[in-house]
Image 1: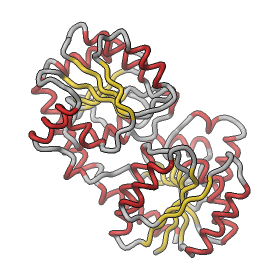
Image 2 (image 1 turned 120 degrees about the horizontal axis):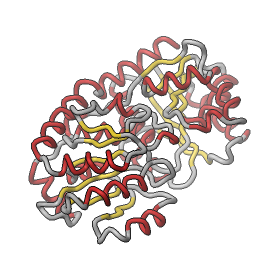
Image 3 (image 1 turned 135 degrees about the vertical axis):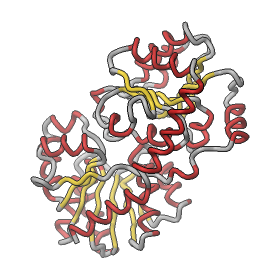
Length: 369
């Protein structure tokens, strides 16, 4: 089977990391998979990784949100590759790729990776509905997203299929010597408790909420240290907000090696807020695979990923006190961190494996083709 994936990229976020796992795995399963990347911003970060993984790909200019020239380019890509199926990801690719596939007479699948609020606003709602109903089936990356798109009419009636993100969890937990080296490289003292955060620095990812909770927690657990991986438009504002925390917060920028970062951390904070419509929470799953317990807000899809009181702690997204209490509790109880880390690794293996994700994706392809 030949499948052409299409996704606009402006850097590497959760959906791009997902594709960097999915595309090679599909190829290993016998699918001739290729991706066309409408590019903008720092798309080169993504396409360089595709190149390193030897994933067949092409790059076109993304252009504006509505771009008839992109539809024409995608039609040429489809006619050249002659896929059995087109698979679009995110709204920009849905709008342009679904139309291009329809004009070429090729069946298409869409993956929706979030439940963001813009889907409720016009003209996005009407455009997303039209694109979503052009797809034969729509993959939702969590049950939360599936409920959202069914309610919003962003797919054909009964046309959603849940396929959770999956990863190969076998190599995520590092040996102790490697963990010690990773911590030393970040300037961590042996007795410091490193709280990691890994996401783009954009509105509603909860970084300001995390800083307030961290400040309060530090009063009771003074050896806490906060390491923020990721970049984005809010970085300067967040750095100013953190300036009063006596050097206990480090902004590390974009890190291509998230595995090494997570193994340097003692726990991961995932403080996302309801407004962003978190579709899955891949960093939380990656932390679990790395035996790192998770403190996350109980919003969106996160309760599907983080098992409360088993692989981490869930807190109310508006409660700084709950967040601070969770950080202090884990900081002061190494046995609890070890137990939750071990159970997180097992959950990543058993519930969110790469093999399961590929099998369920192929099942969707089989329904359509």
